[in-house]
Image 1 (cartoon, helix red, strand yellow):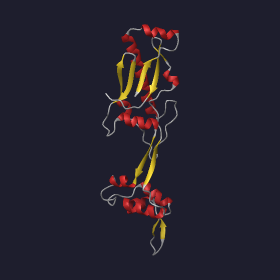
Image 2 (spheres, rainbow, N blue to C red):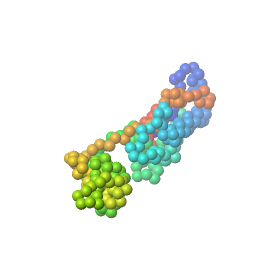
Image 3 (cartoon, helix red, strand yellow):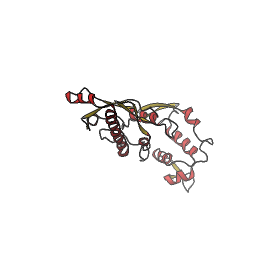
Image 4 (cartoon, helix red, strand yellow):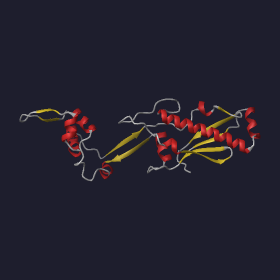
Length: 224
């Protein structure tokens, strides 16, 4: 959740804010919150943080990230001098605010082999062809396929591996070729991809009616 509050501590000019009618104060704060909402949407669209630095790329693939989150942003106005940016739940299994906050701060979580087996295909991958990632790994490990002559072997292409090995076979071959102890648990690091927290430069941009907004970023977990 991002709170937008009127800042009346910046000098004599800001004392005028105290004399503003409640409705005008509320409108100005809403404008500040709406500006932050637009900035957040722009950052997601351009895949960058509030400072203009590109996000850490995906480990695999090049699809854009978090594209649906800006649509779930909403402005809440609990008081006339405070507005909050929060999230509706959305259609995802986890609340959109939880997802946004996790990416905002980054996260490291532990995965166990048992938990991975629970979500693995019920057939163990026997009815699924080897993936391209498995094929690339097998080639990297020096895997060779049988040749035309007896006891002859030749390099296996990506197409041959995905066309002749199933997912389970490829996984077993990778384990054997790596010749390493099987891991029972490991950590996955999700890098921070900030988009919701404002920078000091845009937090202090002048708004209409000599109003400035002070913003503080918290967890993005509020909902309608």
